[in-house]
Length: 490
Image (cartoon, rainbow, N blue to C red; front, side, top):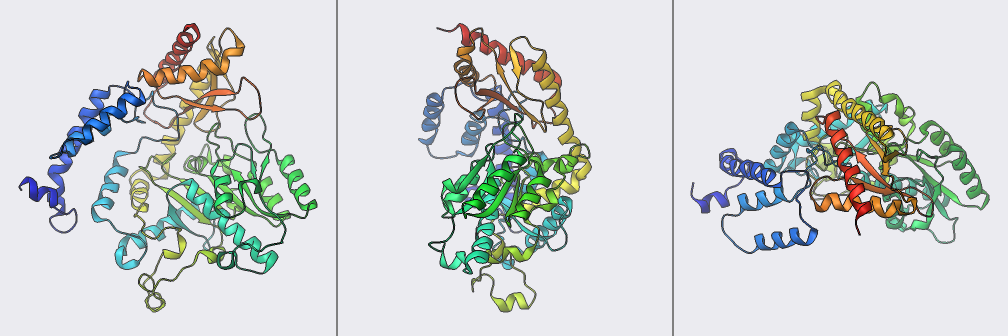
């Protein structure tokens, strides 16, 4: 095959696999070489130096697949490196990546059956299986999403439409929000994901519609404070649209009291949405699944398999307990899901998603589940949980490190303790940038709720099930050494 023919080849059809084969060999070789050049969790470059290197690679034309792939691999933060442990950014399983390649090659789109015949049935079956795993019944429905942000938006959109319909007798998705009615309110903890406020803004409620409920030291929503906030809101004549409970906060993995949240939401006629994008992975583990007691009481929830599921992004899932609550998202497009096609038995998933064109992201999840099984994935979850518990114990025993709280899932907060306590925030923020600059480690950084100095904390989010306790001990030693260097720097 000539270079010109190779560059114009298509990935599908009878000849698609043969066309892909030499290109994939080039990609795999470039991935290996880029990782070898990087030699660590990320390149030892400043942002400006790396941007300049990328700009130089843009200039020439010609055979660029190998060269640009090598640059991407070299310039990546690699979550498969044990020293890359900052974010909910998992190293995907090779079997999931291989499955995703098949989807990319075939390019089905789930906005109509005739673009994705098998993928439509596969997603429907997978969602039914995941709904049963959550504890939902046969009336559940859902869709694959780009992640927790999209799922949270969908949950709050359905909650808004239901609340406005009940209180004002109008369909908000058609007529917009009625004027002159009660102020609509959403209740979420101070540690809830920022996408809750973003969703409120996008839905026309305004970010100020979100009532921030206080949390305890482990960053779990205080159920008593939620009850008080709901009572106070009702006393002001406001309309409680939704309670957003978090099952796995991004900082500590904290899980809100789900049963109490469900009871209080029901008492005030509010929708319960559970953001289980991180913590939903606990469902795979016999040890950790009890942490999610009450999850089945949610009206809607989000799961992300590109966190504790080891899938390449995106692999988000949105589920509702009762399919009829999905009504306001239903859409009919004559060129995609005409009514007579559906009556003739050709199903459509168009009305379940905010998107039209949509990849078959369910396929890689299904392949992974069938390959490893729930028990096999559960062992990966528990390996990361064990690693987090080891890390917390190591921090507690270290003379210069201080643990914030024991891990619930696979993450924990800590800090380096300088000789001068007034420099704590400065030194911890600086040591993290030092590690990035030197290409030695990717460590997270966050801030505890409240005001004043001493809030900056470092974060390890442990999603590499092949990392060892020894890897973690070495990472913590590197962090402490960077703290000492930062503390003594001019």
